[in-house]
Image (cartoon, rainbow, N blue to C red; front, top):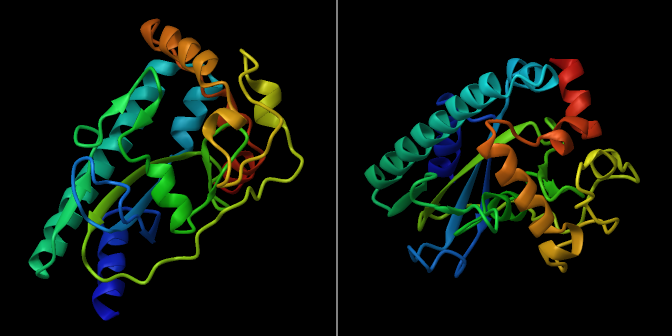
Length: 225
């Protein structure tokens, strides 16, 4: 698996904070038939979170989209790297993995690749939670047929009884039920209430990141930073 280890080192050298490998066979057939997924996790800088605390959303979104641009670059360079090894690959950029804003869902959710590769779990907020950075992250991915050693999927929430994100939700969209991979998203969050509010906020040039900011593990990460 030296090729795999070299690939992981390369992706981290490009700026990824965490890299994981998962079996996603059959999940991406809508646009490409490649069985293996690479999860790219990029921690958000302290600066971005400070903008949120100050409710300076314009500065936050500029900072956030810089991270998305960085993930796009990592995904495409990773795709090129894998192809040079003789395998097929497909970098999941925002353009390629188009998001339905009403459903707040990409064609292949990055969170799916992340949980299946062991990068984190789904919090009460329906955001991915990582043990290192909480929900203060941006996600990307690559699909490939390159042989990979998969991580151990996380199938149950590793949140404790904390309800910070639930208590912070301005539209009470978060249900008490903790996530596991046997549940659907509607079991843990009212996506219609959440989506309607978020879209209104975006139109006003604002945002809703209270569940991310209030996450206990996010707060622990920021204290360390």
